[in-house]
Length: 229
Length: 298
Image (cartoon, rainbow over all chains, first blue to last red; front, side, top):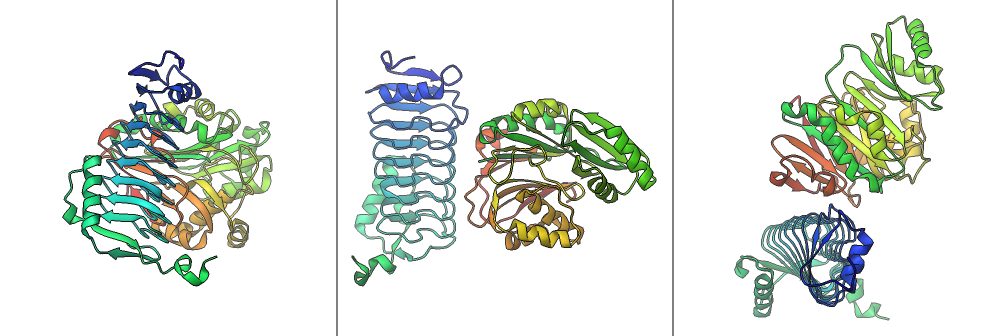
């Protein structure tokens, strides 16, 4: 298929279409819905979208799926591999299954919803996006997270929030350990409001009262005024 | 990159399917390692020692080698040739046979030694390597396989994975080690025989050496976490066991899936997706520096 006849609810079958052609079709569309068939774990699916299109991937996605996403809504009806929605700017990415490491890495904006588990380094260097995980996250999640929020309805692995800046972390289950300069913080009304909103937008059935909040103790080098440039 | 896969069957009824399922998994990892490939398959214990040999030049005279070995060790030797490989069966002590071949047949690499393991390797398209050595038709209890994107040493058949230096023990590796030269010298001084310059062979020899000294597989892997420096995801096979280990940073990918019928590991989930019953599998990514192991002996 070509960009010109990309219409609502087009099917794009990776068994018949080269990956580059599929991505070009998605990137060229201004609007409409697309269903990607037989993704077969291909890498870089639906990357670099910058229009309010809706993409549904029927199966498992490989590395860097929905990377750099802007405005688009991408739904993966399967698992996704390393670097899902890395550097997302806006829009929504939802995964029905589990995701591999570095989901939402450096993402600036938008909402990333992972219905299953995320593995290591979820939300590493987060720069403003919001991530809601229905299951658990692996070790070193939210490492050096700078802004945005990470909600974990399950448990968090070792070294959560190591060297964190201003991102907010909400965890319902246990935290294996906190990373350097990451501490538990008080849940105030503004946090309960934010968390309730995130859970609602993600469609997660969880009680705000069951969560704890974690964030930066602001004790590392960069927080000391004497070290400012 | 590099792609690794492993499949350990818990349900005996699946044993005739082992090769076919492993070939499906290997196929999904072709893009991660188009340079070369190899696989180890474990099936039915042999009474005699079984060695798989590779002709480095493709021109080794395996029957003549078998005759010389038999005369030297005073043993019966049978040879079965398959492309540039041969399966050698002997009533001689396996380790002695391996040592003799390394010493006396410089144009031959010993790919594996044991009673149940067989290792096959080749350069080029992994699917073709699997086809050449009839992977899909092989049965067995467990298998591990590798597709290689070479970084640390040359693209050669003997530099392909799996690496096996000790009886019925083998290893595939995604990553690179940084202290392998030093460790190779230490292990060589302890009697280990090396056949390549590859870092992963050192890891295989380390585990084989520790287990020959009396360690269990888990104890040897605990030692590996302490003594090996570098990046790694390993899949390891023994006569009746299977294990997965990632280094303490765990940046090389790995995913494990387990059902009542099998345990599978791979670099990416796509290699596990074709397995029967995967929709009900427990799926997770192994944690850093944590040993995951399964055994038929337990």
